[in-house]
Image (cartoon, rainbow, N blue to C red):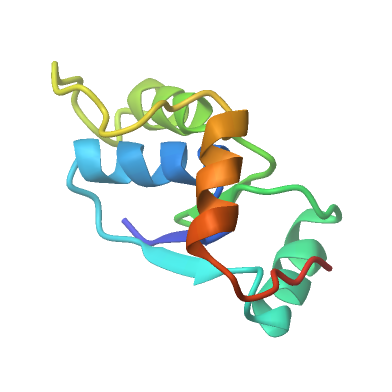
Length: 114
């Protein structure tokens, strides 16, 4: 399977997608749309919108999806076999206010938004 995931470095939704990739031991391209304007433009061109995460699996684009939606797609299309492993982070939620505060404290460099 060829998987390209257009993600933010720190985002609850993006972390959920990464958690699903880890849960099923899937190799994927983790494409940083915040720090690489060309990747952001590529995502917008492919999806017609600016929301993320967007995950392309063997040429099929899943736009503005949660980790839960990615997992459902993978299972429904028999691309992975179900397992009982718990994801390493929530797969269907944004960052909490506490996580946003912690990230702001840890990262003193400015964050760019497109």
